[in-house]
Picture (cartoon, each protein chain N blue to C red):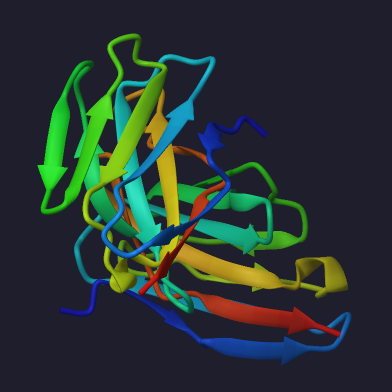
Length: 113
Length: 110
């Protein structure tokens, strides 16, 4: 099935470093979502983006909806050990009743204290 | 503050057995969906429902059945389990475009 290209696949960083990950697609999306999944849990929404060019922050997290509507990035500033997990991007093509999301394969983040 | 509740959390089946994975949400969301998550494959959509009485197939529907008799519940049925169905299963319900996930059911088929 259709998937987003999410990179990097994994990251191993030192506590305090900044992190950047991104997703690209050949399709135009009208919504971009970023989720975090911790071990043994379901994905939890971090940031939702609804407009091209939109830049939204949630604490140390910042995400942007690319102006071409085909990409999005997520930045984490000053990483801490509890940032460990898998980060997923997801995009939606159509609105209304069709709420199917297209998912990236995830970026696995490890933080060394 | 329940959100999306999935039961059971863990299950081991023998090949050929049947079972139902339960999913309930208390947010009055119309849209619900089932995903499976496998290493390196991300989240793949199995079935979804846009409201009570309406279901449709996702990306990987074979071997799974669903029904939606109420807004709250969206069970996933495995009629004859196969080892290829060993996976982690997530149920989600949606408000606007945002999907809220349950904690998952970890299923092993031997």
